[in-house]
Image 1: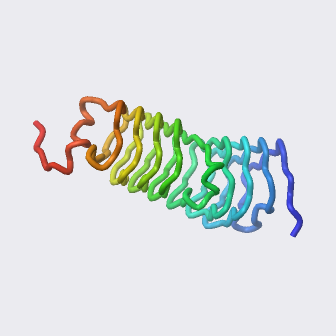
Image 2 (image 1 turned 90 degrees about the horizontal axis):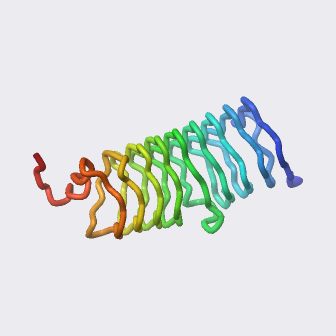
Length: 190
């Protein structure tokens, strides 16, 4: 199969579950209202691309490159971002559903998550230094040996982060979110 080199293209309302996205490099492309659910994006390289209102649930990102990617209003249920080429991963998420997503051992420094649902996502051993969780619901999200140094969770909610198991040095939390730092101690806060 011949490798596609695609630049500055707009893909609008394409169902990639019927006809797969061609293997190759996609630079500065925009995907709007596209369906990638359960599709394979194996070994596809994305650079400076934007995904708007797309369904990428359970997409296979094995060996994919996501460099300077913006996801806006996308559904990313159960996506294993840890299967991407790790050194290339640089993304931002705005108004996305990232429930059950896996970010295991990834460097997510300065990543912005804005107004996202991130239920039961796995951030185990991830580097979230200076990451921003702006108005994000982190119910059941797993932080285990994660680096949250200088991260901003001041408007995030429903998180449970054990300061004894995670580096939270200089991270920002709101007063109402402090209970999420004390869950493991079973302290009753009134």
